[in-house]
Image 1 (cartoon, rainbow, N blue to C red):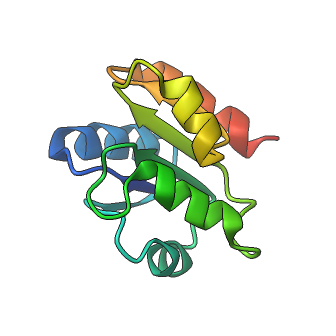
Image 2 (image 1 turned 180 degrees about the vertical axis):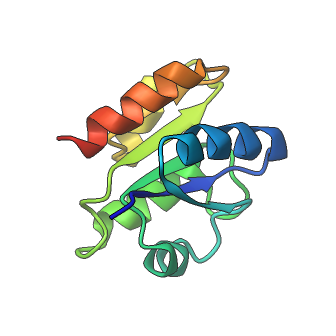
Image 3 (image 1 turned 120 degrees about the horizontal axis):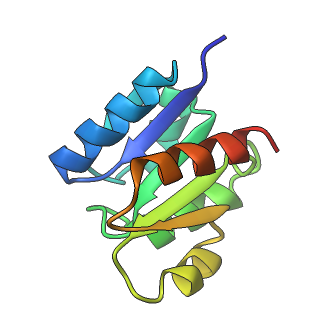
Length: 120
């Protein structure tokens, strides 16, 4: 069975490049330009891992991640928070994210991080 990733970012270029990376790894890719209705989005997508931008429209990355991690049936899905914020490690900890990635990022680094979280 193929892994699924949900990518939440309002930057079309980032969505495109991340989608290509994960499609080449054999993932089914679902993307969204906002974090509104985050629980519904995740329930409908059924992802194995989530990549979310901190500055995503809607709830924003921190609140969206906190909402997911408070949900009994969704909290085990690994979440990677990504952003250009200089205090990203602290933001990821506040959000309860499983990991973080600083923008701009290397696509190989993104791939390695996602695969390591899936293989935990």
